Amino acid sequence: MDFIRNFPFFSILLPMISGPISSVMSGKQAKRLNFAVVTLSGLLSVAAFVYVLNTGEAFTYRMGAFPAPFGNEIRVGLLETMMAFFFCFVMLFSLIGGYRFTAVDIPEEKQNLYYIMMNLLLSSLLALIYTNDMFTGYVFIEINTISACGLIMVRGWGRNLLAAIKYMIMSLLGSGLVLISLSILYGITGHLLMEPMHEAIVQIMEQQTYREPLTVAVGLFCVGIAIKSALFPFHSWLPDAYGYSTCASSAILSSLVSKGYIFLLIKFFYRVIGTDIIHAIQVDDVLFVFGIAGMVFGSVSAIQQTDVSRMIAFSSVAQIGYIYMGFGLNTEAGMIASIFHILAHAAGKSMLFISLNSLSDGTWEYANYRKLRGAAYRHRIAALGFAIGSLSMVGIPLLAGFTSKVYYAKAAFGVGSTYKMLIALVALAISTILNAMYFIGQMINIYTPLGVEPEPGTVKHSNVTRVAVFMFIAVNFVLGMGSEPVFRWIQTGLAQFR
Image (cartoon, rainbow, N blue to C red; front, side, top):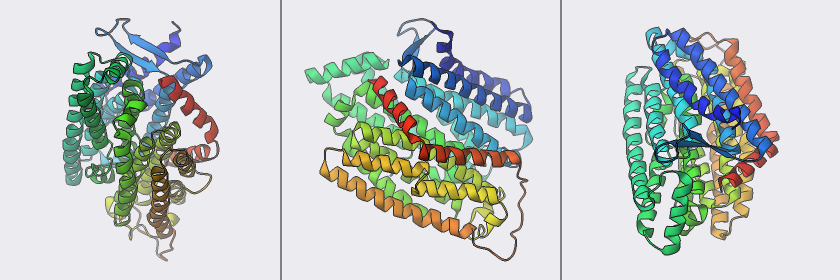
C-alpha cells in the first residue's frame, strides 16, 4: 500500500507516545514537545486529506495486518481527515493563545503533567474520528474523559476540583450507558467492527428479530453521548468545567471534546445503525425535541449569568442543541448543517475564551460583567476577537455562525414534516434573538468607556496570543464567505460513509 496510508495511524500514535515522554521532561520541554506533536499530527492529517481527495475513495487501515477479532481497524475518508486537521488546528492555536495564562495558572512543576493530559486528549480525539471499531471507540471515550478531567482540575482551585468531580460523575454515567449499549449490540450482532455490525442490524430489522433490544441499545448509546456532550438537560456539569478551567483548557474543552463524542455518534448513525433504521425507531424525533430545548434554555441560562465565562459556557449548551436539532431533521442537509456547525462553533468558541481571558487579564474576579466594562480599551485585539466571536455566534453575515444557520434554515425547508419545519425555523429565530441579547450586550459593555483605566492583571500579553486571535478570526471569515468547498467535502465524506 502507499506509505501515506500510514499517516492517520501515526497521527494517533505520536501524541499517545509523547504523553509518557513528557512525564520525564520539564514544563517548558513538555510544552515544546506538545506543540510539535500537535503541529505534526495536523500536517499528517492534511497529507491524508489531500490523498483521499485525489483518489476519491476512503480506505481502511488494518493495524498489524491482522483481521478481526485479532486486529483492529481505522477508517480514513474525506470527512475524517478534514475533521482531524481542523481539530489539530484548533488545539494548536488554543494552546498558543492560552499558554501565557497556563504559565500563571499552573505551577512549573505541574506543567509537564498538564501536557501529558493534552497529548492523551489529542490522541483520543483523533482515535474517535478515525476508529472503525466500536469497542475501540469506547476505550478512547474513557481516555478522553480522564484527560479532560485532568485538564479541568490541574488549576488546583476548589471550584476546579468541584467541577472536575461533577464532570467525572456525569461522564462516567454516560460512559457506562455507552458500554451497556455496545454490550447489547455485540450480543445481538456478534460484531464490533462497524460494517459487519451494520449488516447484522439490517438483517435483524428485515427478520424482525431482536428489534426491542436494538431499540434499547440505540437509545442507551444516544443518551450516553448526550450526557458526555452536554445536551440539555444533561448539561449541569458544563458551566463549571468550562468556566473555571485555565484558558487553553476552556478553549479546547468547549470546542473539541464534546465534538469528538458527537462525531462518533454521527458514525454510529451512518455506519453502524443506518439513518433509515434511526428514523424507523424514532430516535431522530427524540433528539430533535431535546436539541430544540437546548437551543432555547441554554441561551436563557446564559442571559442570567453575571460571570462572562459562565455565560460563554452556557451558550455552548445552546450550540450543542443546534447540532442535535440538525440530527433530528434526519436529512442529509440537516446532517451537513450540523457538521458545518461543529466547525463554526469550534472556531468561534475557542476565540471567545482566549479573548475573554485577555480582557480579564487572566484573573477570575475580572470576568464579572461589571469588571469588564471598558476592557476593550486595554486589550484592543482581544476585544476584536471577542466581538467577531460573539457576532459569529449570533449569526451576523460573512461569519461562520451565519452560514451554519443558513444551512439549518435550508435543511428545515427540505424536511418532510411541516411541524418539524415550523418548529425548527421558529427555534432558530428565537435562539438567534436570545444569542444577540447576551453576546451583543456584553460587546457593548466592554466597549463602554469607564473614564478610568482598569487595573492591569498579572498576565503580560504577547504577540503569539494576538496571532492566535487573528488566526481564529480568519477561520471565521473563511468559513463564513468560503463555505462552498467545505460544504462539498462534508457532502462527499457523508457519501463515503454509506
